[in-house]
Image 1 (cartoon, rainbow, N blue to C red):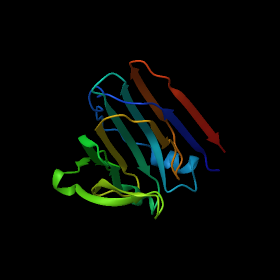
Image 2: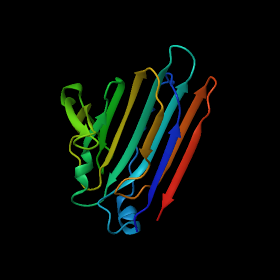
Image 3: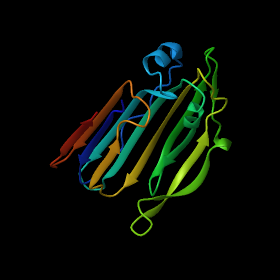
Image 4: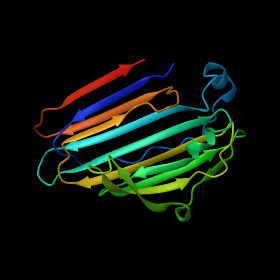
Length: 193
């Protein structure tokens, strides 16, 4: 059974958030997860999204994400190929690691992070977006992929939209949104099973 969950946050502008996420090496019991999700190649263990919105003059937006993905079977290493949609934002931080089944941590170096362009939307109404792309090293069955990033943008943001879940099961999702200034905020959460 596939679960889809999507949140829509409507807003008019944004501001910088506090600092990046704290990295704590942690292994996952991938055998127990494989028993729980027998058809999944990977599991999104944790997704932590933080958004800070400031609607006062000189506004900026700060969007931060932290993902931890356990690789359960062959094909799950596809999630080791990560794309961060930067667009016109400024990348404030990017941290990425692989935690192997024995607990050894291997970091992605700055030399392993490249810039690419991807098409978002349709061929006619879409736009080309700048991306930071990398592959976390030595990802294999039993490994945990752990990465986080922060993006800062200048100017108004009229809405933020994103899917909480993926094509793999999601164990835990956390969204934190901080709003400053005068604004009407609407949040819609959809859950389809």
